[in-house]
Image 1 (cartoon, rainbow, N blue to C red):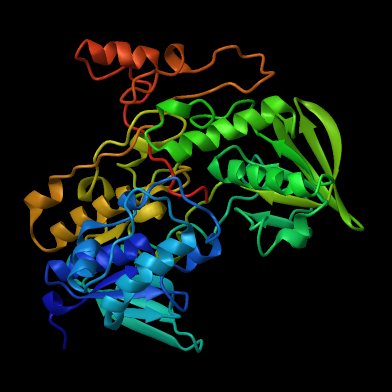
Image 2: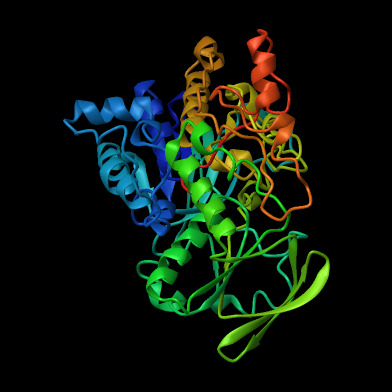
Length: 467
């Protein structure tokens, strides 16, 4: 027989947000059980460990986690330096995971969550029934655990978006999988051989794509036969190339400026707007049938890098009553704050337990997975989410709703690429010289004591790494 209040809180994922959740739970006197599919913490970060993030260390630390670490005698890295994914794992997550090791199950892949004795349809006693977490351990054995609450911080890394503009893989994409990489390959490191002297097509217009393109251009300096095609689904890159000196994260601004310089110098070929119709293997290369500016074109490339974002895997939640937005696939009340169809610049409003709640009591999706298909995420956002949610679970409803979130500004809304027919350089009159405004009109309206121009009402959540 169990006592509901004595049951642990299940946390899915031992990445930065999952381990922060564990730290907050312990700080509140609650017992976490963290499920991690990998053999150690931050298994997804390890996969992009070669990437240097554009957020300095001070944005990487969670306060509760920092308190635990400092009590152990851990030495904090310089808060103003920029770590790589591997450095975050080695210098932050591994030391933190050691302190909470008895609460972590490694090699544990959660595949379904339900209520004890109840399917999704059953009503009677639902809010009083504990959760059952079904998972496979590292031997493949099926196991289960009973929990009073669940925080799903499993992320989206394992579900990259396919190449098709319609959200589906294009014809032949799956068969060409051995020549396609999703995300950011280690072009200058362990995968260097694959890209040297190759003709490479990069598809995507976010930080991940820019990182991949700039790495390829570095490789090109040493191996001039390496060529780069950069394909954009639309003929502009929002929030990236125009921030520059106005960006409160200098490395993020520098990334955009470097990409803009590469385009203007002609060191790569830009294809926009671009959509792939089909891919066919042809010996050592791939034949890509595409539409470029509405006209059919055949590209012959050796490798393709698809950096078109990620999407959440909701299959493990089929027997829970979750309320996700039909477009963004984030919690419904959070969606209007982050929907890329509605926003192009600005800041994320503070949000916590109220925006993350579902009809299924004591169940929450947190971290990058909470943003669904919206393209970017800051770790600091996830830390504030779990702080609020854990306060609610601990019965501190006031603290749970005292949500505060201060994120660095991008400095720009949108920017038009060289050669575009659209001569508007940015929304609302161009980028602002003020770092607390997203554009000229926004700065002007704010100078009058008003909230802003409205184009950025509620939105910047820049991704930590270009991942």
